[in-house]
Image (cartoon, rainbow, N blue to C red):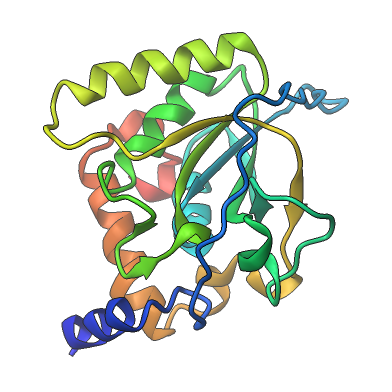
Length: 218
C-alpha cells in the first residue's frame, strides 16, 4: 500500500504538508550573504533545503553535535512567509541547524546533506514535487561556499546527471508554525512519516558512519 500512496502523492504534485506547490522561485544568487552570529554559548547555525522539512529535521537531529533543527522557510521573497503562502513567494521548506562546531564541523553537515537525499532529483525530493521542495545549500561566507562547491564537484564525478543542489547566499530564515516542529516525533504513526520520512532516514543511516550519529541512533 505504501507504494500506491507515494505514487499518488507524486502524481498529484502534493507535498508533505498535503497541498500542491507552486513553481515560482526567487533568484538571490548575486546577493551578498548574511552571516549569522554564534550564540553566547558558541553554537553556530547552518541552513539547508532538501524536500520536506519534516524529513530533514529528523536527519539532522540524529547528528552528534547538533543541538536543534528548526523547520522553516528560506530562499524566497517577501516577509513572514507562512504555510498558506510560502509556495507563492519563492520560499522553500528549509532547516536551521543549530550545532556545536567543537563537536561537528560545517563540512560534516554538508556531507549529511548530500547523504540524506537523492542528489540528482531536480525541483523536489521523492514524492514531494515543486520549487517549494527544491534542494538548496545556503552559505554565509566564502569559506562555507568553498566547502560546498568542493564537495559538490567531487560528488558530481559519481553521477552522469547534474547534482541538483543550488548554492545560494543566505539571506533570511523564517521559522515555520509550531505544529511543524518535531513533526516526526509527535506523529510517528502518520502515513507520510512511515512511508516517506522513515525510509529516507534509514537510507541516510546506511550511508553514514556511526561516529557521526548520536549514540541512540547508532
